[in-house]
Image 1 (cartoon, rainbow, N blue to C red):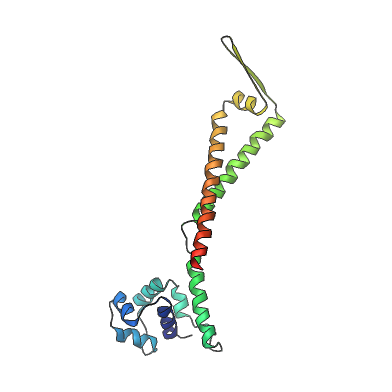
Image 2: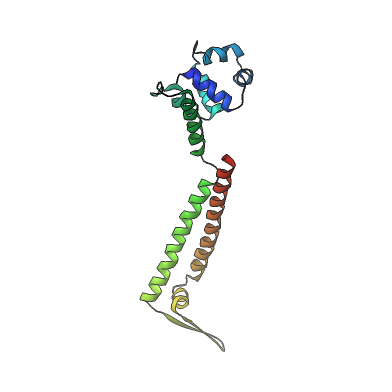
Length: 182
């Protein structure tokens, strides 16, 4: 597909008239028409602006893949499919939430499992006398008290819960966005 055909298809897909596209680029409608008829070619600065407006790469605009044998419907589908794949690969605002949540969930979960493993390997019982009160800590609780890291254990649980919620927000956000794109 030639550059002019791509510009025409993408412009129509965006619902822009030649006049509106010309306004966005501070050009005349005749310039857009010449581009679409392959009578002239946009300068590099306009190619970059076109790629931003149409949300496609400059490579897509410039490269002429072996599309000569495709029917007109296949050409339109190629432009449409490329448009949706290029926009869906961009950060959607929720992908990073999912990744962040998953990363912290994994780290905190593995750390909590490590605490339990160390408790099983090294059972500890701690007895603390405070005046007339006696506190007895066994197993995991004894391990944490003995090493003075119960605060860290509680922090890991908090991180696990928070990161789980963040991961859920990421998943729900991506589901909502994918439904809106359809």
